[in-house]
Structures are given as C-alpha cells and as structure tokens.
Image 1: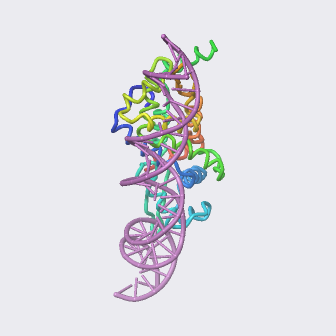
Image 2 (image 1 turned 90 degrees about the horizontal axis):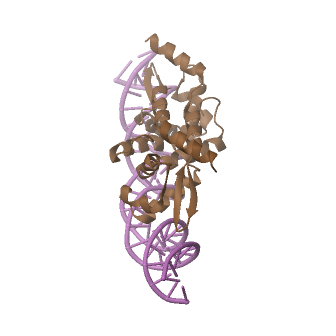
Image 3 (image 1 turned 60 degrees about the vertical axis):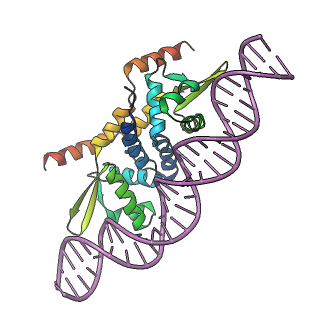
Amino acid sequence: MLNGRLQATQADELAAIFRALGDPGRLRLLSFLASQPGGEACVCNLTEPLGLSQPTVSHHLKVLTEANLLGRERRGTWIYYRLRLERLAELCDALMPPKRLANAMQRREANA
Amino acid sequence: MLNGRLQATQADELAAIFRALGDPGRLRLLSFLASQPGGEACVCNLTEPLGLSQPTVSHHLKVLTEANLLGRERRGTWIYYRLRLERLAELCDALMPPKRLANAMQRREANA
DNA sequence: GTTATCCATCGATGGATGTCAATATCGACC
DNA sequence: GGTCGATATTGACATCCATCGATGGATAAC
C-alpha cells in the first residue's frame, strides 16, 4: 500500500480486511486463537472467553473467514477455526514503507 | 495482539486504529502521502487525486490524525499532513505472531 | 478592514454494522 | 428416522459512519 499508489479496487480489498480487524471482539477472537497451542479452537470454546452470544461469535467468525484471516475445518461434530498467519504477514507487508521514504523522513527528523 | 491475550481496553484501542484503516478513501490518502517526497502533502493537493469532496477529505484526515497515523502542521496558509511511520510499525508488531505459534503451525502444515 | 483562499465544522441523509432471540441446518449416534 | 448437540442464518433494532452542501473560522495580501 505504501509503495506505489493504491488503485480504487485494491483500496477496496485492503480496506475490507482492515475493517474485519476493526472490531474489539474480533481482535480478541484472533488473540485467543493465537494463544491456543495450534492457533486454532472450536467454536464452543470461543463464546465463553469473549462474553458474547453464540450468534454474535458466529457472525464475527464469518467476517474474519470471509476476509481470509481464518480457516475453517469440520472435525466430527465440532468446527475448528484457525489463524492464517500468511494473511497477517501480507498485511504487515502492506504497511511497510519503501526504504526511500523511511530514509527521507528520518533525515527530516534529524534536522528538526 | 497475537502474543498474549488482549484485554478489553487494549482491544478497543487497537480496533479503533484498524477501523481508521478500514476505508478505501483513507487508504488511498495514506498511499498518496507515501508517494510524496517527504511523506507529506498539503490538503489542497489531496482532494483532487482522491475524487472526494473537500469536507470528506477533511473528515478522513481527522480520523487518521485522531488515530495518530498522521501528523499535522500549519505553514502559512496551508496545512500539511504527514505519515507517522512509527505508528504503522507498531501495527506491524501487533500482527506479528509469536515464534512458538509460527513454528507450531508450520510443522502442522508439513504433516498435512 | 476587506477580500480571497484554505481548511474545519455542522446538519442531514442513506447505508453499513454489532448485537441478540428465535429458528433453521447439519452431523453423529442410538 | 428421531433425537440431541453444535453452528449458522434470519429478522429486528439501535448505533455508527461516509458523504456532501452550506457555513464558519483562520490567515495572508492588499
């Protein structure tokens, strides 16, 4: 995003991902998943630590899944959601400024 | 965010920042600023490349500034907004998974 | 101080979004 | 195939949010 000007459609896609991260409940969901051994958990273990109703948790999981931030897998009766670290890494890349800019702004800082 | 479980207040704060990034117009604003020599521009140069009205651009600038993603400085008649790269770097850190988790998920991938 | 320009704020409006209770769906097991 | 437990979907509601026209406030130049 920060290296090369964003076109309208790319901006829409990126914004959709950030919007998915723009809710405290969803962030706590991700944080909880990251605290689990395999970066995953079944839905029945998610509603209690969040303090939200089951439909609300289900809604948040859907939003995160549609943003491709979570993967979904059924195992018997239960459904497991798992973090997709690659996608988070992509976001990180999007936030990375080009070296050109980082240097320029650091020089400017030094002259202030 | 991904190392250590997020408390409610921290989740609120982080979510507010991501929400600020969750709009295509604002992302294009950031992208445009990053394309400028010093990572900054005056407002009068921002409304045209975005195709949004001046009040709307002003609104977006306010949202980004309140999220501390932009700095603001007056120079004569004009007001310059500048990227705050440190804040973007903090976001990047928040998205970084603990090594423990990255390794565990990579091992899992290999066994699939 | 008047004018011109730049930017912010206000008010209104349409659309998106978080939340939950109720209900539906789906899989497993007897 | 009937029942039960686990998730998803629906419908409703309140709130938030992006957008813009109109207006206000500030600053420079004369």
